[in-house]
Image 1 (cartoon, helix red, strand yellow):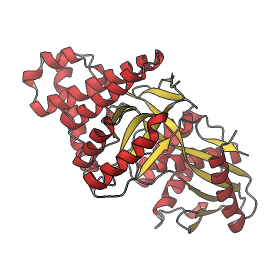
Image 2: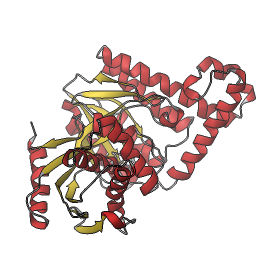
Image 3: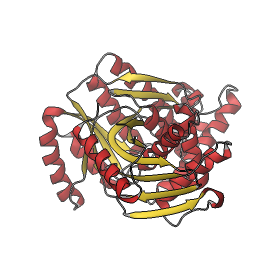
Image 4: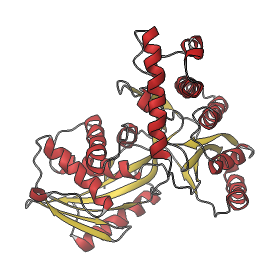
Length: 390
């Protein structure tokens, strides 16, 4: 059953589709996602703990039989039209996420007849909630339904990741697409990035809210520093693999192994590896805390995650630290940390419902006095994954 907000989102996109293309055959909701804990563990084949949220991209779609693909971005008021026989990257950046999905279906040997699609939503762009995965997954889900292509949700997540990697040119992991497609209401997903096995973890306090605070800092260093961190982790793995044949990634490393060879590792490399190994442990501890409904312990692990990201992995920034430190002083905030690659983006906080008003007031003051900007705060609820709606 759709919420009032969801009905408004779907109705707005349907109205635009009617204006441009006629009556849609299908409307799809592609949710954004958050990651409660487990940063920079995915490419080290570790654990993450994401969830789909109630900020979403809505897509109205109808099949065509003439090979034409007509797209309209409602929020940007921009349109694009291509032919399946003459696909090429578009000057409209947003269109390449859709074209990438089509290209991957065609590469898999699937037959498409063309499509009309209008889309828009309320996933904040650049917030770290993965509006790109919401768009890719919603579009892939819709094409799968319209043309009866036979993909399950995991296969669609893999296809969405390939589209972003190969066509858009972003070397993302699969977490975003996985969470968008396989999210479940009131649940987090403990995803094992080594083999993509997963379990749903309960999030059973209805009085808790997940709240994002956007630092409004563009993540200009995130790409280059991401590659540096990845290389540093690989350097640590190479040394440890020489001592422990079973070590293939930092997922296989224990704190004791690291400590035993600390003097052999460059101090910076040691700190990077130590953070990842401990973060993997924190994700597992967080799931245990959820299992016993110990949200205070869960919040403490979020705090420890940020401290490690700040001090050992060194991917935070002054603005993120100001927002995190400020949030932690507010009664009713169980935990707060940066979310995502770092050097900007959002913080994520676990806030008791009764403290939401005070949280908004206090954080607005911190934004203005500490950052010199107006607040940008997003409250989220955990929802189900990508789906068609009536």
